[in-house]
Image 1: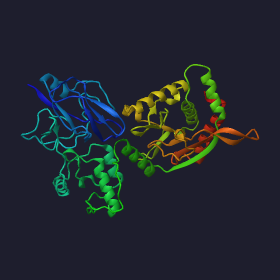
Image 2 (image 1 turned 90 degrees about the horizontal axis):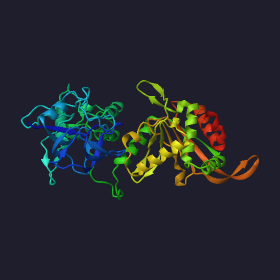
Image 3 (image 1 turned 90 degrees about the vertical axis):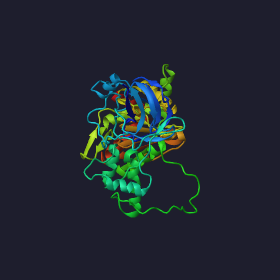
Image 4 (image 1 turned 180 degrees about the horizontal axis):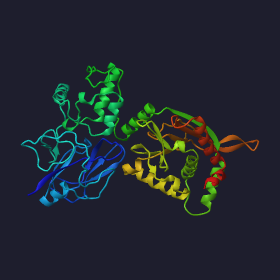
Length: 463
């Protein structure tokens, strides 16, 4: 006898709490195999094809294309045979197809469940996952199924909060949501989430914080509703802060909120660096990019000043100095600014760095960077000179401790060997977390970078 199993949107890594359904790859009635991609979703960081851990027949889909689903929300149901169902629910090795922190095999025993759903007459046998649908799915016009959301009205949501057991688990999946509430003094037990089955999302906590900022309280109690009418002068278009733009806004806001940063900068004569690059490329072989040379200088500087390749553990009140340099670099794409990460940049030479920068840039412009290629950076290099600007004060890419900004390299009057000459000059800016080091360390790092730019032979000492 066939058994119906429910597959839910998995954790896609690095605290991503929702994803947008871009394109369904299967239809209701299709036969799917284990690890077959069934839906293409877009997170705030990348496009991801989600594989299904079950083999069987698709009986329902949840969420139309363009809909945003929270992690843990139902994606589809699959009718499987008894043997397949037993393996899916038993202690097996699973499929082996892995996203980020997510294997498509049996869910681990330690997976947190929000609230066990009571068995009712309409419950589906064999259903697994962290959150149960709040109501039976309603068929959409295209034959897919849709889930109903949390109570829509404030009164209904308040009633749901009143009925919630005071000693039961709070319906929160994301640890980032819990942390955001804890750091701002929000009582999650006083909230009714807008996700499926009352799941509390990040947006619910942020709504409370905004209301608290206006009314002077953050205890989770509902604030007075804001007037619906907008000022007459508040005209023009509105752009939702979601997707890449929303992720950038959240990350930069958190950086400014949590990191006491400081910036120092210096002008450097890059004439000899440009000559060295020209000579290397004239010698034949792979062409070396300027970004690769700057990255090589950064990794050498971080070996001398490891304080800047670290992060702060606030809960333990410790500075964690990292052994490996995973170098992020800012890349502008049609989807917005992204920061791909070159793994183990400290072990790569200029040719390897050039090749990896080119590969990641091409993938970024195609919009197909994986979450693994966008996370885990320990230091960021930002070459904003490509936009024709000389200087900037970079915002640190949280939770890193520093970012080096590089302006455009342009001919300027410069005193060289005691005489005024026209040289290729660049401005270098270093923004650093003042908790991990003082100005002397940051200044030493930046001065070493400038010395390598002005005299590339200095770098030979560390090779």
